Image 1: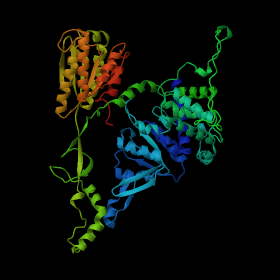
Image 2: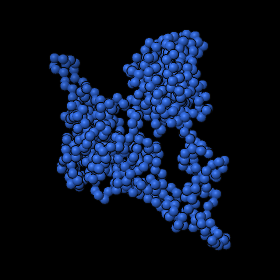
Image 3: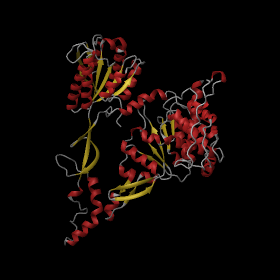
Length: 612
């Protein structure tokens, strides 16, 4: 019953978000829809499109769109035919006043995200490429379809921050637009009424306080919430935002952005004074000095804005109730995943001269097996055709049937940039000392086995280094054999000292060798960080910690992407400090079984993240 009620609430919120977006699409920025292709997602898109005016453009942007098609630029065929530069409209300009639909938005490149973010901020596109400089209007809304399956897959943060709504549609059976009383006529009337809707300062203050208590640092989120509240008031036929509108904005805009649950303690302003019997007899303190009159920051005409405790409580309760299940549990892994410096599960990209997939072009002559980028070469030559023909006539070179149709010079040559993916090799460095064996060795083994299976599916290579006693041993050289990997883990005993510095030295040497072979190494260190055996094999915690610190700094200098999984049941500051010295992502997991540990490691591991 609770699951059905939650799904019904999600369905109502999805319909409400579609209606608000149809009322004010450009100001609200758009929506992020996390759902696989299906009838519910298609129904939601049909609702938005049907509620928008018929003359609003609706454009779909493919994943691997070229910059020329996205931004516009030189129309090569028209330019060559006319002999003068002819500009081409890009997809962003075509979507002006309407909606741009992003397919597989979780895989957008960083460059495409940056261009979309700039257009959403400015409402226009500043074009300066291929000899063309122009500013064209591009006021649009973006609907980003996030089809990621893994928990760490998702939209880029800059784009996500600019979209008012974040909706989860997976698991819903259908949407009922009549439940909210929305139709095309009421939404058109709300669109006409929107400019007259007033937004009280008390609602702005309450939304800002709610965002702060939910851990939302972005001011853009508060601004989008106020815009959503105005659209909600217009939908309800009112000219002033009320508590109901603020509640809807808190549910739809602020709740999906929450990074923490609000504190249960009441704010200091609401605390009641102690009874007279509990007050002390000390003389009252001097009253605070009055504020300066007509000071530089004073504003005599502006009335003070006080936080309405009742309104704040209502908005906070509505936002807290609407926080998606499991959202806060994923935030830590997701935040750590964003800090990882590794490339992705298919390996890092390296520049190649003769083979690989195209990745743009650059000026240059096709030498040493490099490929001529014919289209880019023609694009560079096209704007100069009329001048070059006139120059030929001035030199007495008349146009004949054998004369070249397109005059290309050496400075026009462009060669293709090619990139190859390198294989990823994940090196697991497992602490099998007495302290770790007592605490988490069994869970670590189980987690690594799950991760090894995941690496096997992606055809990544894995290696295992175990350390205990006075030595570190390469239990498994880089391999794709799942059977060998499991066998090496099964034979790993526990007990003895913690030669952490020796293990780090061995991991650095192995990672350097992997890099020299043209592969991408990634290190996953599972330990409690309590070194007690030095490089010389002698016990002594002080010397062992100094050696471990030196090895950690050497690892940081090597530049290898590293994940430090603190397997101690009570994480200590020393482990976090050591992770900082090696510039590793620090992941304390005091309470986790093998599957939970595997999920967390995959979220931040260089072999488990997608290419960004």
